[in-house]
Image 1 (cartoon, rainbow, N blue to C red):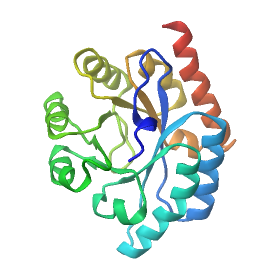
Image 2: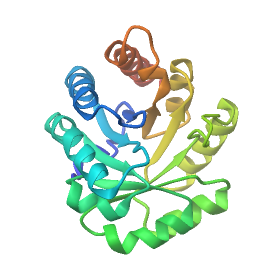
Image 3: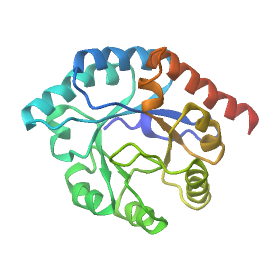
Length: 219
């Protein structure tokens, strides 16, 4: 496991956590992520995987890992803790406390176990007790819908005030970043707002990093 990328740095700018689209062209995605990570501070990349056989998924993760990890970011796979070790990833992101609980023994202590899909405060606390290395709030549902920004800000502020385990806040748009960071998020996750930007993900990531930096100067 890469410890540093997902370790919050107290008093310093919240860090960027990148949510990829489903990886269909691993080489192109690897190049885009490596370029992005060399341009801005990326703590971690969550790799979303398409439906495919296990060997194909492992190969896709391996193809992306080199560029991401070479730039100093952690590579996490979405929902497949069983392939983390063989694919050379740094950990997995699990949806819901039950999925996390089932995966912790497989991942710990060598790999990161992140928790998302947390529908309530209780879910978040259960995930923390189960050994989550971070909790994520505000991620999109199966059809890409995000909760409201106000709802995510409220949940992040509550978590940051009470708990020490790092918090990742998902931004549906670049305009959400400053509010989520100001609420106390250790990391701000951005996905479609980067990869759907007509200027390309590198330019959008630079804007995201600037918004995170702005938060540091105003707090």
